Image (tube, rainbow, N blue to C red; front, side, top):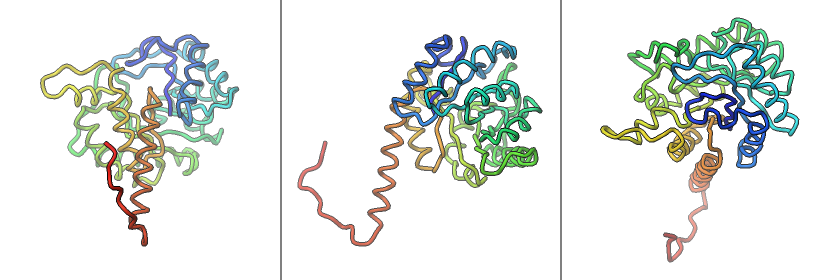
Length: 283
């Protein structure tokens, strides 16, 4: 899932694709680099970001969704507003990615249910304008799994079909670096919810903390793509349905390698696959 932020203030690429023509071209470039779908958003969800009004979000998002869909791109709309989701679906979007899991707008779940569209339910504890809201956990994996389960049950009760639901642990949302790493270490627990799993780690703060080490300053967001690709390979190994990334090519390559290793493991465990070792290795 490639990211197209049609915003002036997103944490890693705000303003780069704010023009509709540039945003559509960027989405097409992401597909050419290996993206299977493109996630279009018109509102930054970084900590402290102010909300944009509905009219502005529509102005940013709908022309880009329409432009990409007209080119045959599978489009996801990243929004917390039911009105934006409805108009994006009408413009050709195939999936709704709501970081609030339908909590920010009570009309969201009925809109998605009526459309029969897939819906990403992310773990969310509230808007982040005031900082890292409610980021306190005794058992982050258990609590996120339980809270996601409860939210999925509410979405099901609202009429969205079970096979239309994708879950997302919400890395970086009301979570510190140690929480994000713990969740990545136990993606199997999230997969046990029984729905496809989306992992959205791209360029996030916890990667900056890991790369910086105990004393160093975190590298800028756009210098975290290699770390993102590493997470993508781990997520693929753990069976994630998709990874949401800003820089597609490195992640597509990482996922391809992870898949090849999995296939080799399966072949090696099959009977009659001993084979000869070459005389020289590749260095």
